[in-house]
Length: 147
View 1 (cartoon, rainbow, N blue to C red):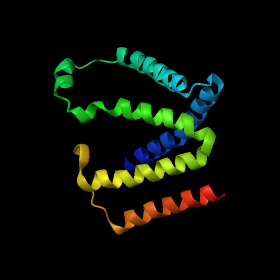
View 2: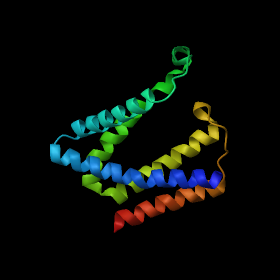
View 3: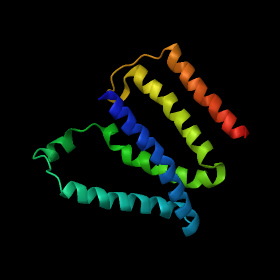
């Protein structure tokens, strides 16, 4: 089951450059990266609304909303910053360099989150293997940037 989940998240990773590239194209076409980011969230929000309306909503939803910690609510803000940044940067850096740097940043900060168990994530201590892996990613980014 773990390998199936790993394959699934790999496929999700594969579609992120597609999303970034088509959003960047929309931003260039509209000559307004912020409007393209808004369209991205509007379309995504409509799709999610249809899905949510088609599923059973838990009866204790409002109580759960009240009990959620502050940091649980900042995902939308982070998503808006991420999508807008990708729309702006892909035309300037290219998809490979942009996503190479994104992956490097994600892995580096993911190790911090794992190591300290931030946001309720189970602790996974930093070790030399993980540091070496991130170092390889950073080396790859430098090679991509060079060529």
